[in-house]
Length: 227
Image (cartoon, rainbow, N blue to C red; front, side):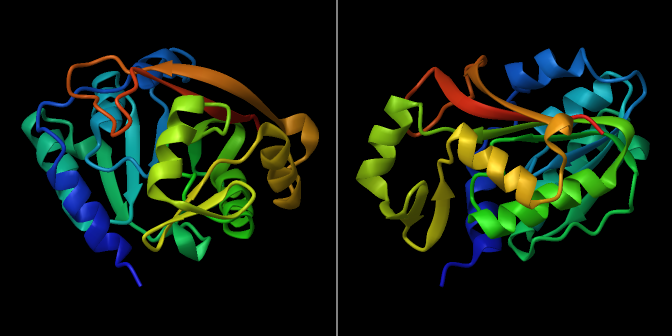
């Protein structure tokens, strides 16, 4: 069985130290309340977290791997943001988040939640809702089956084990439809009037934001929950 912590440690080692934040982070940050408490789920080396810190927010960065978290801490310290960054190592596949109830104004996750089968993802959505403060919001993106280029690439690297669920050498990747995500959110106990799921086209905006498929954009599903 693949060791996911080792996998993501090795993956983070390939990320350039000068990689910039995503366009998605910049676009969504404009909707954050000022001086927000932000949870960045699966944020790796913290490129988006560092951007949020630069805008005056406080951030808890959560990831399965210790080495990217250490990189994020070092960068925050270099930029004098260390007092507003906390890192938490957590395996999301357990379906729980070691974070307090109603502790975040914003829960953010870019392309980190499409690695889980539906039951685990449902538990994670329930956890996200639990840690949101009243009037808090999420900005979550997951890869979509509507992205033809991504799906064509995935077909060369993974085997589909059930609809929308793929196995790539022991690592799960999912491509859930909008309707499937809505059902998963409802299964998590989140009222239908508290969330919206929609297609979102994300541009990849800096020279170091390179993906295996060679695309210059992603078609993703965006999940916004407003508590």
